[in-house]
Amino acid sequence: MNLIQEILRRRVPHIIGSYFFAGTSLILFIDWLVGRYTLPEYYTTMTLFGVIAIIPSVLILAYFHGAP
Image (cartoon, rainbow, N blue to C red; front, side, top):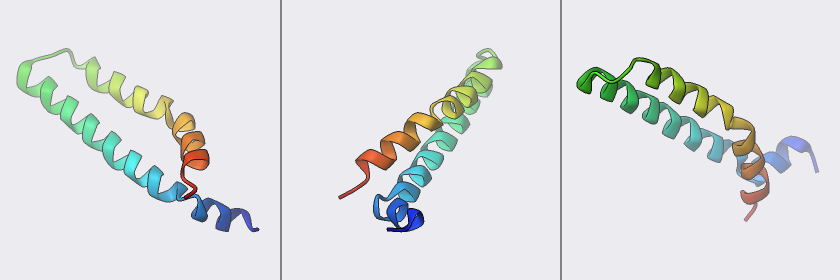
């Protein structure tokens, strides 16, 4: 099987897309909290680094869990 076909069969792009949407929503929510309740500005940066830091784990999980 081709690698691209295998990745598509395991639904990796779907899971990565969902993670991107959820991560973006989380960052925007934390930014709203920072602006609304005068929390420290670095919370948004910490959230961004946290979302980026677990991308390898999400890729591995998506590959091995995504197959029907």
